[in-house]
Amino acid sequence: MIGVSNKASEKISEILRSADLRNPFLRVGVDEGGCSGLSYTLVVDEQQAEEDIVLNKKDFRILVHNNSIPYIDGLEIDYEESGMVGGFTMNNPNAKVSCGCGASFRMANYRGEVKKCD
Image 1 (cartoon, rainbow, N blue to C red):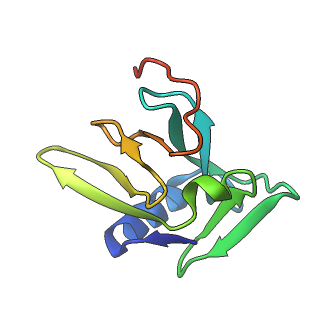
Image 2 (image 1 turned 180 degrees about the vertical axis):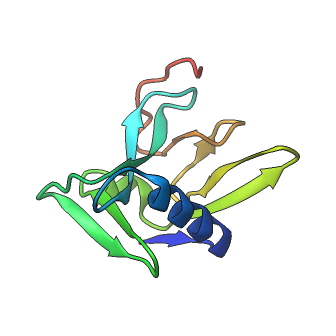
């Protein structure tokens, strides 16, 4: 359902270890907005909803609300460093168009509400 590269796994584990939460996990989802219409969300959380799907990775858990599954099924999360900065990258086989920064995307059958990126 969602793949995570070794480098992204290391970074996610580091982030979750530094979170001031008892049982943190990475929540992956989709919101309307962004320059292409749909935006990825990656947040540290500890509240699990009944509609969440749990993906157990080697050192951490990913939770995805079942409403987001059609948009991100097959998503590959990576982490890239460039100079003094780094960030997560998303390779989504469902995206027909992605913005230049890679934070938002559009699907063939659902565009979402386009909003200016910050």
